[in-house]
Length: 249
Image (tube, rainbow, N blue to C red; front, side):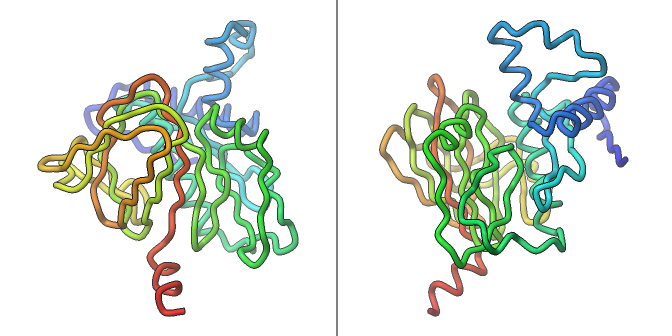
């Protein structure tokens, strides 16, 4: 087990983050599932011993097996806890030596962890799985060349910079304020080629809503600064290496 506590964070955060990771591993689900379940009235879940039903725990799944978990506590919000945990889980998955499945053409596991699939076959994801992913905000598919996320947002987020990933965003429903460009303040690397900052200075503000498409090139700072209700949006992430291949093909 590895534990890191940053200066200035509250002491209990260390215990909470361990509990989140443990819960994600034992139940093979992101801990968001349990917090939302309890908020909807399933309070009996709180009686489970050694259970931490707080957003911010993500299982690490490689080759269809749970090999570990990441828990984060003490960020600016619960959603940011989850974003950091997901970035860490993604880094572990992408650095894995496990070969992706080459025969399956269906993304059958919407568990909150990245799924490595072959890019040589068509991949079909049925509507129920997509809807389930949107209720929690989860990746649908992640490969070395591209990623597809069914994202859900209910509050502002951190400033983000993806060194290699270009984001193509399609808004399914909801509305938000998105700031792009400028400079990310206090940007720190939270995972390989992924930076997060506290805010953006000097960026351009955009009001986005249903049916709109936003393309954010790799390296460009961007941040959701306001969200009205729930925002659901697809994010297709293409890596720089894949873009180079497509350009020269």
